[in-house]
Length: 472
Image (tube, rainbow, N blue to C red; front, side, top):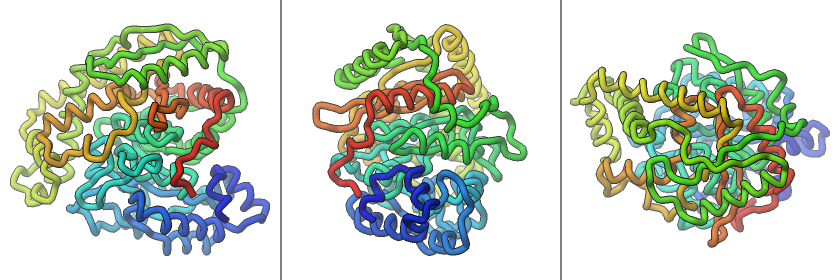
């Protein structure tokens, strides 16, 4: 049973299909790993093993991920009977009465949901250290962050609790923790994955659900399961011919890749992060791709930094207070988020529309950029996983917190604002032995192209056996 932790989801499901192991045995092995590892990592904050056992007992539908244990991120994803606290004391005991559309699709494919993974309060940080539930620790170094806001899911997969876990990405929240924990993290194009049935979009269309995994094929298979428009979606991404999993079977064409190494806002990027991306560029060139150094992608990074803060703040303020500055809910938020909400409640409608306009401007800028290049290559983060506390809001003003937030990952958010797909691929290692991701993005709707490139890189420089000491 301990060996099951080393398998990806497709391999695990294959064993179940061949009756070499049962779905129940796989589930109990995952529960045992969570009970053993979670006290050290704090990756899972709401355990719902009883509901998982009930799901298996009632029978599982067939798919290439049937019987695979997984987790939902504790922000934005409902599962009937499970707590959705969103990392906040305000919602500590909030139990969902329905499934989100994406949850329905996971269950319809026979994936087994064990509970909810840790996240910062309202997913507003690049480190998962909520006051209400405590910090998630990185399995590569317990003194460091696993990242955020999908840090719990990422630590759970990186430690071998489950082979793949649900995440979401509003400014890099799938890709950043994937980089810090040595996993493959993929953010699909806007609304490839649904966010319904209650909401039509999240934070102006910037937040995109998907997953972190060890293998590229698991990630592609999970997107095949979950992708597709929902009833009432305000827009739709271009349909992908065939499946994302089948896209891995054929190498991509030789690509024209733009490499950008400097922060678009001028903030500091650690030299070892740049060196890691340069090493990735050499690998790409050895594979026959053309890599060209480029100064920038042609969008207004400073305006985008301001717009993101406005849009996210207003959306959270509406959800928490209903627009009422006197709402008693405010007092239950962490201090830095109270400040953010109060700031947002004073934003005039014209300023909010200006911020939305910056998202649209970034979409047009990247559309032009990707008419000249097939793929963009950058660091995933400006530094390896920092020590716990550095990126947390505790003891900081909103301005101090936000500056740290944005400078930690200045490359990723434009793919949320533009809706374009992007991924972090675990190709590098820092001087201290920490994982370092290389970040790739492509034009809107070119998700399959990125998956094909990731599969080629996985074959050329496999990472599957590069595991943390705290594993399985």
